[in-house]
Length: 371
Image 1 (cartoon, one colour):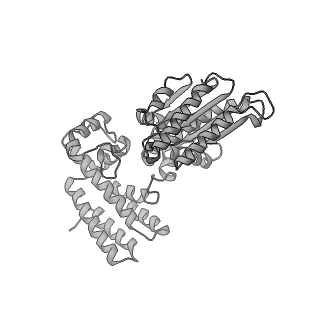
Image 2: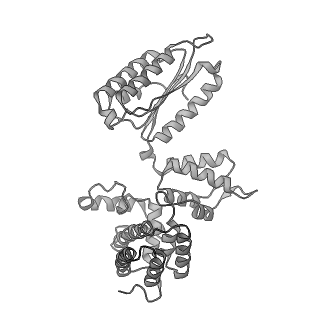
Image 3: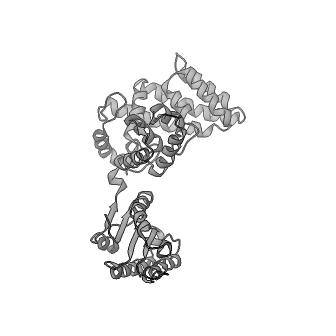
């Protein structure tokens, strides 16, 4: 716990700001009066804005409280020029960071409470190396924490509201949101608000039905039902999709992206490079397969819709379960059918729902895709 001097730096703006807020809240409550508390916004787009933020911080922290007492409580928040971005790389911004370091060195151990937070931060820079040696320093490494950071934040939100979330519901939430923690906080609050009176547990069904897939909120259900292989369910999902939507290309893109991933998952599973059981994918085998594929894929950690190695293992497990119900030939035929559907949508721009209904029948009828 930081006493009167704290530095919170890391790779995730949301997590850094959340942790800094946890430190600042009791500091603010303990302040002698509201005029001795100040929050300085450290976000900047130019060197001049960065200089202004540092100057405001210096003035605030070095000026006595309006009503005496001397001690101030100051938070320099959301510094965004400590990393590798265009502004962070500029000579002017680097000079301002050096100025900040000098100021903080003078303030440490003083009567005032000083908090500085920012993300992303370049850990190779002199400022980070200096900060890491200071009492009250905290590093937030969301990439290293991985799913654990997501789980911790979600569980904290649930606990604060006296609500429980099953392990499977948590995994579904993470898969749908692609591990985006900021989105998770918003969605979990919505789920808590939507709980029926007297209910204190968020179920898998609630997460599945009420949480959109991050980045493609309108088409998760229709794509999910399609790859489950039940024609009637797929047709009903398509009907609901086009009840509010006229455009079918985003849905088709979703189907194409999933199918490409399913082809890769099926090949890796058949070759026994990708291990797992049921709807589970072994994360260690996925990592090993990524290392093997790197000469052809390049950066296997880069998040793209077609890179199987950068996907959430739980999401891949669901795709693997669906892929096992299909042959490679069927998956390839699906891809051909999707391309044909795209051409149909161009020729029938006002009839996309009919194109998708025909696509579903063509692919999911008992006889399978027909060329």
